[in-house]
Length: 133
Image (cartoon, rainbow, N blue to C red; front, side, top):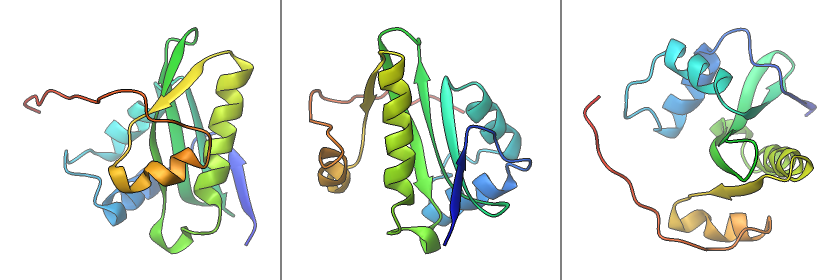
């Protein structure tokens, strides 16, 4: 399997919607336009393609100076466990380090070991506020 990684977004964000749906991530009923805007307004994003098919992505929202929040790192289920997520993360970390931006993320508890193996450590309590959408 030859996966290509690019900063260039896909031509069609329908494939990203497919990934989100396959992972059960679309509880907010995001549209293709929402996902495209979300990605294009991010400080940095990297996309993984199998030929022309989008199979994974990750992005960073940041001020570009102090910290960057890694979010939306995802890989289509049938492509998981092939190192694609790890490579996406490595590219994100490299980009942050090159710009002296501290990468941060929040994750579910069962992914703590995964991110620890990439050099992350637990540092804070995460909180959120629900809003009407």
